[in-house]
Image (cartoon, rainbow, N blue to C red; front, side):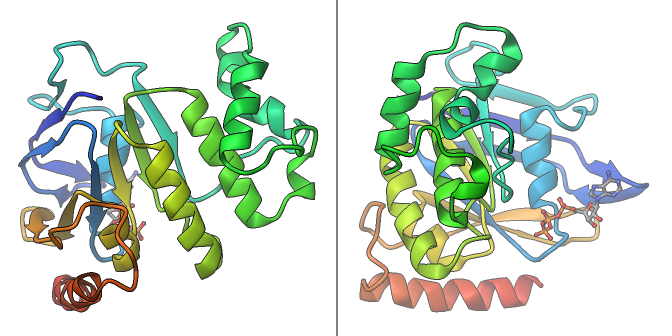
Amino acid sequence: MAPALSVSLPVIRLGGRPVLGACELRFSGGEVTALLGPSGVGKSTLLRLLAGLLPLPPGASLMPEDGAPLVRRIAWMGQQDLLMPWLDLRGNVMLGARLRGEPPDPARADALIAAVGLAGREKARPAELSGGMRQRAALARTLMEDRPFVLMDEPFSAVDAPTRHRLQGLAAGLLAGRTVLLVTHDPLEALRMAHRILVLRPGPAGAVAEELPLPASPPLRAATDPEVLAAQAALLDRLAEAA
Ligand SMILES: Nc1ncnc2c1ncn2[C@@H]1O[C@H](COP(=O)(O)OP(=O)(O)OP(=O)(O)O)[C@@H](O)[C@H]1O
């Protein structure tokens, strides 16, 4: 089970204005926390701070609760699959090792390719794969890194609804035990996949996070579950208020 991650941030300013308000957040170990909020509220900014893609200001701290440093323990999956067009599927899944100059592990890559339902397509180039297949390939590449912390920025937003539904089920199983922060605009995705839901809403001193209640059943929840449908309506209302 991956450790929890405690985050303490002062006000985050970008371009001279406060984007995120000062906050203390705790992402529970081995759980998926979904982060929602209106466009431009600062969801990706928070993810980029955690990923080290934005410099941490003085006073900020990101502390895994096992006491080990966060560096090199984070995997990232974004909206674009970012597959290299000149590499085949197996080469793309092993890209991280290649970029780090480490020996590749084709057996593990093939096992993950099979786990995401792409067995037999190891030699295919990204251009030969559908959008949903490419996102599955990106998921396999993310899992290939075998990191305890996984940051996902709208990972399934570029695919059609039935494919997204299948990818959510696949990802929930394959990410089990990791500490995941999932940014999404899709309330149903959050309600199906998350153990906790945070909504970011804008404030004068930067956005503030608010935790919302979830159905009692554990993820992965059925989209047809009446409790999920009721929570979806409430979450949509909450998001409309926050916008
Ligand atoms: N490098 C930057 N310099 C200045 N302002 C920035 C920078 N990056 C982001 N911003 C601003 O910070 C705010 C938050 O952006 P961010 O991308 O985190 O929002 P978001 O909630 O992820 O939006 P979306 O849902 O549309 O992806 C926006 O107003 C954006 O314009």
